[in-house]
Image (cartoon, rainbow, N blue to C red; front, side):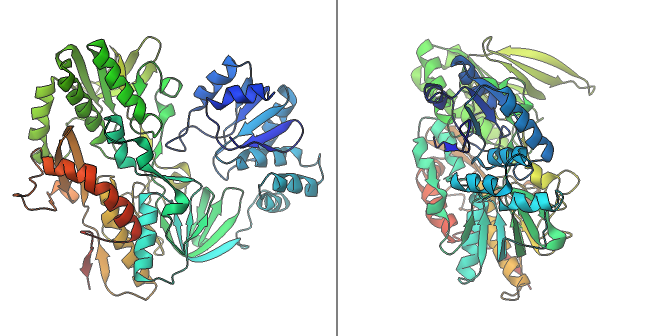
Length: 558
């Protein structure tokens, strides 16, 4: 926990955790202000978790969230009102502390000399020159003046961003590339299924961003606030401006924990867990073991409406849990309910028979058309909306001892409201070239693009070389057009030691990487498990993220 003092009565900090609150109380802080919206990061505790800890230690707490780069004058005034209202000293926090500092600066405009505001922020490690420009320009960012300019700018430092940067540099080593991402840690998210299954240690799925960033790429450690594609500009947190010649947009999806009533409050308690968050996947394994020790219980696994990251992940958690209970001899005393908002078990029919075999083997009850809408942790009750055949819906309740939730997911707000988005909010690209339909110097890959493929790391591994080639073709240093065929892969962990390796392209056409005599993807396979556990992690870290395009060469035309 890093505290930075702005005044004798106010300090700011990057994201804090519930365990930090006791130390803050002992240090004399009497109030907390949260300026970060819930669901921004995969390892972010929700405001309700922080609030509960604050109240337990006698601290006042307030929620004044702002999207990255979109701190308004009104929020500045509201922050000032909180400074007047709350007991002192106060700690305000967000992802990095910059939004909190910006709100403070706006609240002090006209009260403190401008140089003093800037100097105090600078002493705390925050550059507010962009806010100065915004104030003197009547609230409008002057995009004509750029803080930085690069040939290629990549938004997002996840699997897609790192992979496409490495693929670009493998083809053009001297290319000027900047990557925009505020995160300090890069996660191998496909590994969290095995963390929740007691196979992987969570630490093996995380590395520092600096360690995976390709050499020569300029890292702009900031969040994106907005796009100005007509002016080839990206607006950053703090209202700074970055210009580009080509833009690649791959920020991933936002996990919308707040869309389910009570979920954010009870995550990590009362048996409520999710493999979709780094710090909660170990709790999944704890709950599996707890039901094992109890000799049985009620386990509910939910899947929200599509699209989500890795559509098979909700089932993976369920199958691995059931297999552990089977091995422990308590499976027949565990009531397993799979509540799926969709109408089918898996979107590609060829893989369903093998999955249904395991559904029967584990005694899983399938409940299609059921969407989780609320969680009551102390009562251990999940409320779901069940679709009826006539189009109506009813609400039902299911009790649980363990509830594994996959949160609803959506495009980040700065993408959804931008000129780059289609009517549904996704980056609007050609599904084969991944080039934007209206702005030809903009490309997108990964989860935020509107391509109708499975949103998996395997899809990104195939998309990155396609985008890299087509960007360089646009720059006149490559020939032909690379085309992405919609490839996606979902290694369905049906038991510890066996996987149904689903691989397919657009339209659900099967696309196996190996001959059937080696791995038949429609049947559970030990070799596929070995691939998932032993081969795919190093392939990710040392192959995909390093620009080594093993089995990922794009189809070429022209």
